[in-house]
Image (cartoon, rainbow over all chains, first blue to last red; front, side, top):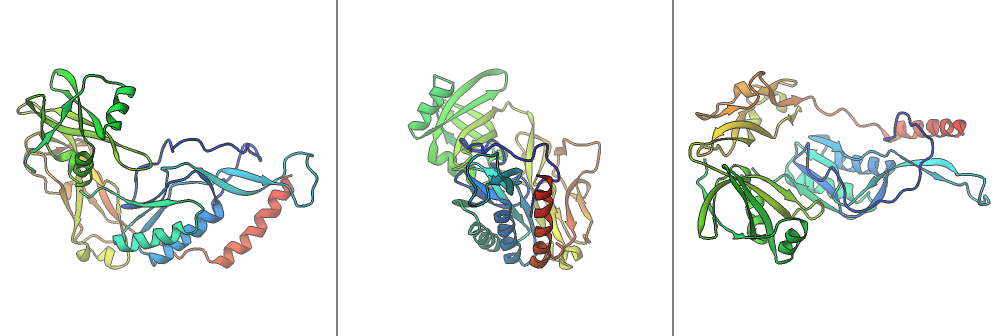
Length: 137
Length: 212
């Protein structure tokens, strides 16, 4: 699963996902992509699950690019612990994804395969998404 | 080279954020025609027509004859902005063209003869480095696309600009090197097995605990 190699601080603020994405709204690498339509945290597990679904459907032909990176450590308090006594331990890594962000890009496969692969990948994610493709030249 | 397309537009007087939004509320798209030694002309286009033109392809390599206020202006689309979520056209920039002018244009690259590439037959993947290549071209003869031949390319081979037959009068902006347009990447290796991931996960968790 994706996670940073090292971080300056072990715990991070919760933060808010405001507005639309500032960058990463257009296809940069592949012919097809999956665009987020809602703001949400996407965990490293969800990214990995989606990646596997996509590559399996593509039968390991073509290429997949992941355009989001889970760099936000999300902490949790253990169960049956009273409030207070500091912030909990980091449990998982997540990426803040704003609407408009292209999360995955795919190339080297026909459109029908890419569409189906990204549909299966999107099923692993907690947000509404849309399949997009490069404007035909 | 595509022939110039006619496009009807309305001139607009006010510019800026508020005026542009007012134009969009009227189901129009704000646009501007600049260059050619004249003052910029703010115009508005029909929303539906503008979207159709952009999504039909070859938009940035097609010359338009824009009819605005009884005058016809020859112009080349230089850029278009899309809504980040909805992908609808938000704004278009046009460059006014003079007779005999040369322009810098990004021309899309088309790839042919995939089945004659031994590298792709062996499972290699066509890795497009440049979907578009920037050229200096006469405004009257903008090529719709360039054709990159993949025949004979093995895995790790690259298709370079020197191997592309260019129309007369067309020269690449990058001239100091023979740049790569695409290469044949090796096949993707087997993905990590679930068992390997499961073994790695517990190892990572105690490490996090130990740092507490």
